[in-house]
Image 1 (cartoon, rainbow, N blue to C red):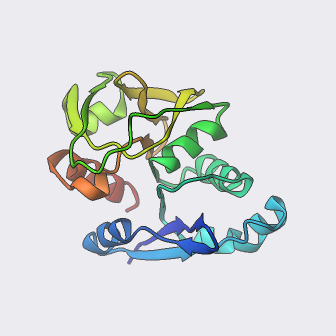
Image 2 (image 1 turned 180 degrees about the horizontal axis):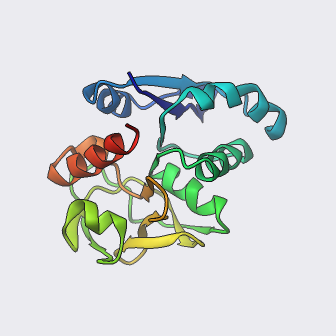
Length: 199
C-alpha cells in the first residue's frame, strides 16, 4: 500500500484538508497521510519535527488554499531534492513556483464556481503534454493570485501561467486549476500518471 502526503492548510483557526483530494487518493487505493503543521513554529524546527512523516510518504499532493508559509517552501524543496513525486494544485502549484525564485501577483477575474471557465494551451515539449496528449484543454479556475515567473519550466498558459514542471523528475508538476473537482478525461490522465510514478 502506498502513502500520499497532504500538508494541512491554515484556514482561520483551523487546519483543513480538501475532501476531493482525499477522495482521489482513496480512489487509487492509496492511503492519505494528513500532516498537521504548526505554522507559528520556527520553520526549520517544524520541518525537523515532521520530516519522519514526510519520509513515510511515496508521493505528495500539495492542495489548494489561501496562503503558503515558509514551512511549505521547505517541504516543497525537500520533495524536489529527494525526487518524491509531487502534484501541486492551485496554491500548491504557486508554492512550487515560489520555491524556485517565483514571483506572484493578484488577479481579480479568475475565481469562478463553474466547472469549466477557460481553456489553456499546453506546451508540446512538456511532460504535461506527454501525459494529456492535447495542446488545448478546458479547466476550472478558483484563484485570486497568479504566478508571474519561476525558474521551473512553464508547461501551460492562457493569459497567465497555468502549469509548471520539472520534466527531469519522476513527477514534479503543478497546475493552477483543480483537477480533483472535474475528474474528466484529462484529470484522470494526470492522476493516473501521478499515481503510477509512485510505484
